[in-house]
Amino acid sequence: MRAYAAIFRVQFNNSIQYRAAALAGLSTQFAWGFMYILAFQAFYAVNPAAFPMTLEQTVSYIWIQQAFLALFAMWAYDYDIFDAIQSGHISYEMVRPVNLYNRWYTQTIANRIARVALRCAPILLVALVLPASMRLVLPSSAVQMGLFLLSMLMAACVAVGIVMLVYVSAFSSINAGGTRMIMASGGEFLTGGIIPIPFFPAGLRTVVELSPFGAMQNTPLLIFSGYLQGDALVRALAIQVFWLAALAVVGQFFMRRALRRVTVQGG
Image 1 (cartoon, rainbow, N blue to C red):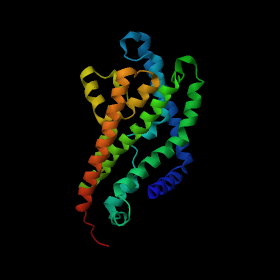
Image 2 (tube, rainbow, N blue to C red):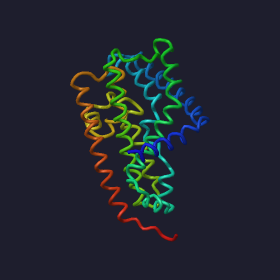
Image 3 (cartoon, helix red, strand yellow):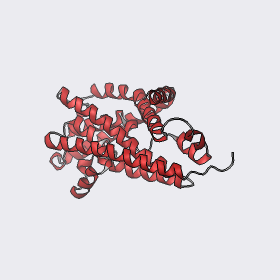
Image 4 (cartoon, rainbow, N blue to C red):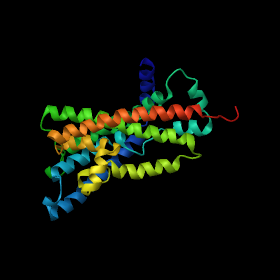
């Protein structure tokens, strides 16, 4: 564990240096947040009863999504990993005395946490002092906040579990760009990144909620907004635990299989 803690610390410190990129991302996330809220306000103004979530819940969902975007994003990869696979530098990684899957997992989550650390506070502070129609509303109890934080941690790990499968798929392709593009676009929609999953048609919603995509940002954001309560909340957390364990097992299996077949040309 000390080795992975050191890897996390080094990767986190390296990623947190990119403050100019964080500032640019921050302005982009404010722009998208306001755009989404204004669009939803227009729809709610026509018929508020037609939507499964209240406007207040939807606004809170959007601001928390923007504040922690980098933690759940399906387009956030460590491109050094893809480069190591494609260039043959993976051979150096393989001789290090650490589990490669765990190493990459640690690197990826450290990158995500560093990006969030640079951006979340300004977004949350501004969202809390906006006019009532656009304001972020905090959870009504400490229990709800605690469950949100627990769910957010599991959601980040589920997201990284999916990303690890994309890394592993790069062993079997000349260029992993296609896989990344499909996951970025499809994953963004299926995780509730475009519209919250409760807005999906009933059949699609059920399927997505049971999939690993529903166990990502969807669950913690719905807990924070107050939409998920009671038995539905317990069920959503159980699904997260299942996918967290399942993706770790599947990812380790395919990583071992891929490493047994690695052939590095030249040297």
